[in-house]
Image 1 (tube, one colour):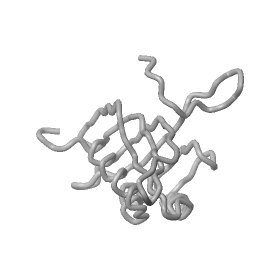
Image 2 (cartoon, rainbow, N blue to C red):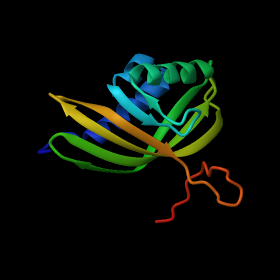
Image 3 (tube, rainbow, N blue to C red):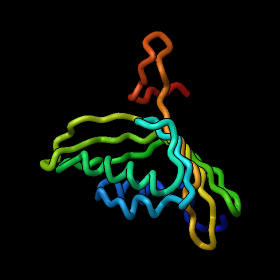
Length: 146
């Protein structure tokens, strides 16, 4: 990488800004045209930027006047000349137009980015949360078990 900014961290920072602004174009610009997403919400998986764009449009529109602040913690990455793989814990916090915290959840995320020229695009993203075996309910609050 030689003095270059970690592409995973750069992607996460751009993701956070796009989500806060509810900017579908900026959000989708982070992803390759043939991206494959394993999202934990709704559909089992999505292929292609058009499907991912539709998800983002629906998500951002559903927020109405709310905004979502994304915090990223426990970021780790491995970078080669052509690929970058990273994972983190994202905390999504919905806030009202007045800045009041409304709800929050945590999500595990893994991304694979591919270099194309000077740019890095997400080619695969996988989000998840641990499932309780007894109740089959997702645990949406991070508990440090490392």
